[in-house]
Amino acid sequence: MTNTISRAIMITTKSYKQIVPKKEGAPLYSIENYERPSVAADCAVFGIDTVEAESSRFLPSKVLKILLVRRGEEPFAGRYSLPGGFLRRGETIEEAALRELEEEAGVHQPKLIQFGTYSKEGRDPRGWIVSCAFLALTKTVGLATAPGSDAASAEWFSFGFDEEKKTITLTGQSGEIIIETSGGIALENPLAFDHGQMIYDAFMQLRDEVIHHDIIFDLMPEMFAVSELKQPYETITGTSTSPQNFRRKMASKICSTGQFVPTAAHRTSELYRRK
Image (cartoon, rainbow, N blue to C red; front, side, top):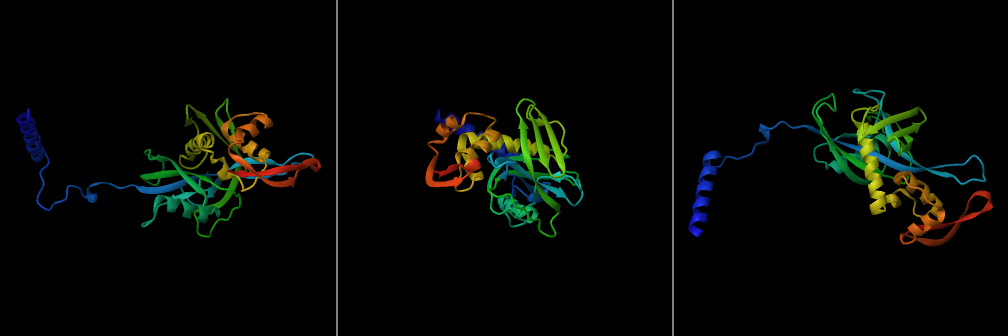
């Protein structure tokens, strides 16, 4: 048996040497033998905004929002897209994402989770460009676009997802953007590049992270009322429950700070923090 195995190894090794000849000192791989794409980082940035009620008898609403930038350059000049840009020499892809977010929207050090890589031929009319897409979570909704950025302006859009129709509705000062999907695929992309698909994929990733990894707390301030946590949680997960059941659900994940804040109709709410 040993002789048979040894002979088989000798035959295999001999065959490999015949198939893959190697000159002494010559590398088997040369980067010049392969075409190389440009690499970009794109970010789906989600945040929670507070919208005051029209009457003091009601609590303010906590609204899930996503950040879009209006492109100032071709291709797709004037259309909205996710913030992002090209990888520079010496950067990691995460560093490129953070730099672009700061330049295009003034978003500083959000939590980043890579959720996809997009490489379909023709996705960018400028050429062969592979994009690494990140889910980014921020506790602020402030904006500032740096001079010289290829983004003309940045804007937060309210995010809505129709569970039955599987349709995303983004509502901003400039109007509505509707992304229709079927089977997880964006049917029509009203945004630049393939960013309609990226937004759908990012929201599904956000939903999974909130359900299984409690990432909802990365969207909340350090201290919050349970009612403030409930609204964005249910928007993201597509669930609805009573305040009592939600409080029980969160009981093992939050703890009281012992502090209270005034709310609607001269009432107070107890503040909690993540355990």
